[in-house]
Length: 273
Image 1 (cartoon, rainbow, N blue to C red):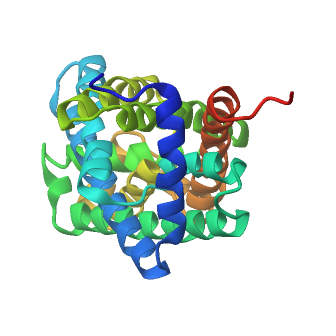
Image 2: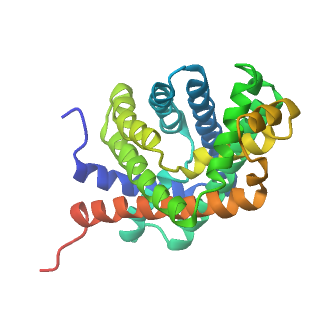
Image 3: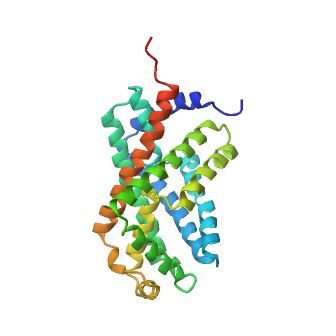
């Protein structure tokens, strides 16, 4: 076979998770920053498609089709992504890593992802990428951030769950592939689905909300956003974390845990005699 079976993927996930838990804190952080940057770049391209394509629904679909490139970079170039690392629950259930080791990885990688996303967001705002399309990019970035910072707790949580079910399935499929092309194809469809469906990915949101946060400090972008009917007051550090990043992250963990637990039970759990 030119791919691993689901049972083989489950076994391989144990070794992958052990390797992640064994990383030093500095490597976790640096690889987390790289993943945040990769996903941030995907967010830039996704926004660009939404602004640049005249028909809104088509622009959203094009952006959704571009976004999987971010996860492809994460998995193929080498980095640590908080959402995908939810699959570390598999080796935890197999008692190959400790709860403390897993939580340490999640915490440090989440911070690294945040730094990476913020760096890309600051670069687009202060490098004047947002001036493209007559400041239309800036207006769109701020509008997106305001929308995400206005989510209800229930919406953020549920959309986070649904998103990471698809993301972890995409990662699982990539583990099944034995060549680069197959990995990219396997990633493409689940990730395109979650983006087009409007589900919430905490690491992508790190870029999106801070793009709006930084963007609104530039008068030209702020004016364009206000002219488009965006409420700038919706974007604060309190709403960024309280209404978006924290509840979405919790939802992402729940979605990833669902995938990990189902596949562990089906392919690894030893039945009692």
